[in-house]
Structures are given as C-alpha cells and as structure tokens.
Image: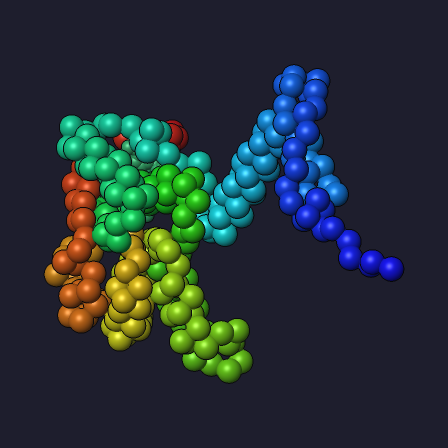
Length: 251
Ligand SMILES: Nc1ncnc2c1ncn2[C@@H]1O[C@H](COP(=O)(O)OP(=O)(O)O)[C@@H](O)[C@H]1O
Ligand SMILES: [Mg+2]
Ligand SMILES: [Zn+2]
C-alpha cells in the first residue's frame, strides 16, 4: 500500500475569492488548512492593534516618567510669552525636541532664577519627546542625591549605589530638575552618572539656578567635560512668572 501523502496542497499558500460585506470581492489567503478572511479587514485590524499597542506603551511611558503633579500637563504651547527674550528660547527649544526625536544626544541646560519656568519648560519638552515613544525619566536632583545616600547605609538601602547610577545612567532621556539645590553629593557620583550617559550617548536635560562656573564646580571638571561641550545652554534671564501671575491676597 502506498502511504505517501501529497503535502503540497497543505503546505503552500492558497487563495480563493470571497465576498466581504465591507470590502466586496477580495482574495482570501489560506495556509495549512486555515483561511484568513478578508485581507482589507485583516489589515485594518492589524493597524488598530498596532495603534492600541503604541498608545498602551505611551501610557506606560508617561506613568514611568515620574513627572511632578504640577507639571503633568505642562506644554510648550501653554508657556506664555511675558518677555520678548522668551520667544527665541522657546523657538530653539522646539527645535531641540525635534533634534532629540531624530536621535540627537545633545544635552540641554535650562539655567536661571527661580520662577522663570525652567521646570515647566523641561517637563513640557519631556512630554513632547515621550509622545514619540521615547522613554524619559524626570528626577528631582535632591531625590537622586537621597537615593544615592540611602544606598550607602545597609539599613536604608533598597539598591546599591552602582544600581542607582546605572538606572539613571541608562534612561534614554533623563531630566534632572533643580540641579544643585541642597546637594551634598561629591562630584565623583555626578561624574559617574554623566560618564555613563556620555558613553551610552544619551541626552540629559538639567534645570538649575547655578551659573556655568558654579555648575562646573558642582559636577567636577571631568563630568563638565562630558556634559558641556555637546549641550545647549538656555539662559532664562527674564523675571519670575510667579510674580507676574501672583494670586497672593493682601489685606
Ligand atoms: N511663561 C509662563 N507661562 C505659563 N506658566 C508659567 C510660565 N513661567 C512659569 N510658569 C508657571 O509658573 C510656575 C513656576 O514655574 P517653574 O517652572 O516652577 O519655574 P522654575 O523651575 O524656573 O523655578 C509653574 O506653575 C509654571 O507652570
Ligand atoms: Mg524648578
Ligand atoms: Zn473586509
């Protein structure tokens, strides 16, 4: 008896005409005995699925970004121009977002007095970047320092120092907010962080009240050599928005 079975029909792609109630006459594909229905319907379903996955990832990224409540909805469009010197800075920051989206690893330093909107702008930039499904992370500079200090003590440690540095060192886009405030860290910690980000070619955004000389003193020459040459330094030289928009009540 001949037990050979002709598998050709089973293992080759086949097609047959079908009538989709949405898309009319179509060619349905079959493989290994399975038929896949209207190709146009399948295409639409697959695009919907991709879109849903992208949105889900975006939601995850936004949650993991760790933005402070006050700045969760900060946008570049919501930044009011109250001083003529803001216009060119905002225009350049919009370009910066585009550069990061297309793979630049340029750092950004927003420097200036308190209330000039540095955190607002930095968070708006982060949200813009995250919108393109690039993983971003906000950290308050003092929180980073606290995590490092906690790592030194076995009683408070949840991570080793090297793990904290490695975590923040490898985030695709990191925002360090209010750099230099109450900072007790030695520059070698900052150096290690910036060194890793430099090696991994990842951009860092910093907001700070410090000027360039103070910043260099804080992070040390080595880290400054990594950060500053490939950075955009934006000086926020205008007055505090808190004063402009104050709702303080006086009696
Ligand atoms: N030009 C602006 N337009 C709208 N809101 C602003 C502007 N500048 C600052 N703000 C708001 O004022 C508050 C203080 O700004 P913030 O970003 O914290 O300043 P900084 O980080 O420079 O101290 C925030 O609520 C911020 O959203
Ligand atoms: Mg701030
Ligand atoms: Zn169809």
